[in-house]
Length: 503
Image 1 (cartoon, rainbow, N blue to C red):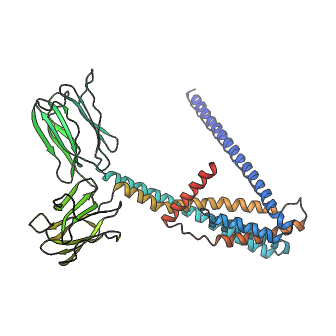
Image 2 (image 1 turned 180 degrees about the vertical axis):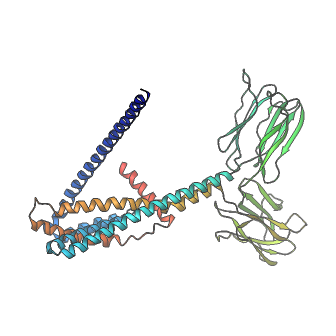
Image 3 (image 1 turned 135 degrees about the horizontal axis):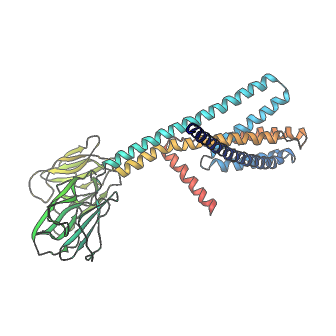
């Protein structure tokens, strides 16, 4: 009985599986049939439209007018995104279909077989090209994913917002980081203490100093950023002992260390801060020079994080005879400094990594000196002789710093480099459908038994001439899809065209 029961269970399972497969196959078959029906209706509609376009040549016998109208439309399409490729693809199909029609009229079996082999070889080449492009796209997607993961893991994930809850002491501190995560110190109890507005840090701004009043717990606290911006004072500013922690140069604060054995509310006494190195290279983004006619009074470097460094002093009146700012674009670095040096710096000029030069500041007297950053490095500061702070002491050397990739810029660059591969794959897959549909449309037009053979013959002649015209018009546009700039232009044009059509 047990064996019979097991056998019945197995039979029931197999029957259920079989029914599921039959239902699945039936659904797939219905879906495939619906798609074929839609494709057939699409081909018939295109065939009717093509016959209407050929009537000016076939029935009206206005060959010149037909070619003139086709030329104007082809020229307009060639200016569109990927228009040249589309014209060449459709024109080639028109030509092949017309030539095969004429070969069928001649009745040569050898010519017909040769044409069939040529069509099969061409179709195989198009399919192989599409498969290759898809494989390249998959590889590019994987490389881009790995690169983004690598750059993401290298990000220093700084603090972007701070919230502090207080009563008579600091009840809780919450740090929110760039990746959206949150860390807290202390614990809130009902009723909740006062909740001041959050202290937000701007992009590229870091937490570098914490000032606190500490006793048995944290009585009060204040935060300062790399740009010198300070929060309000949270809690009591007079109770407890005064403590201040400042991050080392090139580091920022990410958290606190406290006495774990103390109560979780209020915030336990802070004993130290957690620092992490700032991984952005913080390049020079602007150079300001104040000079008189004979020497340079002051040079000020402005950095990406908002900080500044100065050499020399400004004029006594607060402004100099010549004061100008040389701004660097995003991704541009200071790569070369040329000076005229005597007892002080007589004149100076700066050159960026893109070859752009500043004006010449100061005088051209003194001995010429020039410094160029090594490959992969940029100029981050100056070294001068000891002496008077005004004017700028004689520059003796530059301070270099290695250029480090910005994670966001690296991810954007990786995406732009992969765009040509993706667009080529999209085009190759689309070309398969375009050629197949156009071939079926031409067969319907040239095998239309509802019209005399003479009209079908004239349709073939017109189709052959139209195909050559479209191919010639498409030769004008030979843009290279391997260039990321060209690809971005194609995508922008396609997006604008789609927006205009919807509008």
